[in-house]
Image (cartoon, rainbow over all chains, first blue to last red; front, side, top):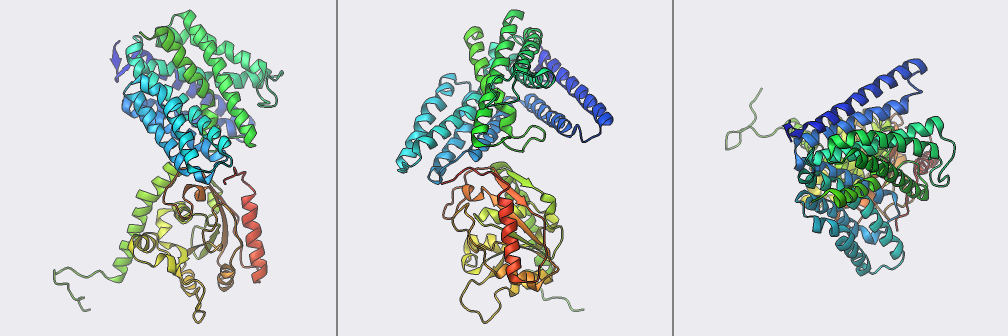
Length: 315
Length: 233
């Protein structure tokens, strides 16, 4: 593949299209604001502005180089973990254990960076999992032990292990994707999932009637989910062959898989938030909420896509 | 005008204003290069109504106390230019011990040390009053000590005497949560947590100590009830 700015051209093209969409969204929101007043679109324009930030940061890190990109992805994982641990009940005796869990983030992303799949895939689910339980047990505080060890292990899996597959795809994909490298795989995965979030939101807003899991997420409707699934699958069928070695049919399947996984990730995080009695996980990203509110769909979409793609397309 | 005496190496000795300027610069550098990065990257803050923090002295910021980080975090929210005027009030017996702790407290943070308990011949609040007279912004923790982290204990009344002596200085109530989890009393291990800082509307001396204390406690527990905090045992 030919490189421009150190990137395969499809990656640059995909980024250009994303910027095009952002410009369009900014214009549309501006027009609505002019018609109905700035207050009506306050949240929407905050949302679009945050998207500008996210996309710009992503572009810069992708362009600078793999080490920088992996560091950036690791930092997002750290923020998600920190947000999670700040929201859930914790015990004072587990402070040291929590520090170990934080330190697992750089290790896990470093393993992705040096592309040691064997270690990467067992470090958190085997070594850290056993280690966390051990340190908590050796502290000797049994009250609330099971609850604490469950909460910390789950949080570590959802915010570090799952999200670290982004770094894994980015680095290992350079050899496994002749079309557009690791950046191509990551762009396909991220753009499709995030597009699906937005598509499900709009379909749900416009036509949403029949709720899927009212107790967990009252705004998730069949109309939103299926509408998002259809548009996302259609989009993936077009972009897949440009960014990955997948054919139109494979890309179609990948799109449907990403849309479904993204939906499940969203609902799962909603269940956690509902259990904790909060609406947003934080206030870091204006218009979106916290980091977890933005990456919730990715906690499922990223590992599901990474392992499916690895199974069928890695040599 | 007479030349100040030169030191043996020929350099002019540091004059008081120069020393003070250098001290301010050191304080600003410490907050810009160390405190702010730690607070923003390792901890991460969720600040509500930051604009209500005082922009000029004399003023008194009153907060609950969970951790050494309370002081540093609150100060990190102030503009660098204002920092030399921001003075946390702290126990003399704990911080005036020399060593690294004393250096940080005195030179980098710029505390106003006050003597706890005992000898009542001199007004223990005198240094605070002097500072307010100079137009500085005080940070006070009326719980007295960091106490049990993340539990609000009863307020000492010194703050009311101070507010009574300076009825024109606004009192700004602040509630913080999470800093005691990140660095509780008795631990040196900093564990990252997002922390909440809720700033409330300022109020002025209502005319009586009891009314003042009641207002202050109501304001701070009102701020505390804004958040929904996970249990920490």
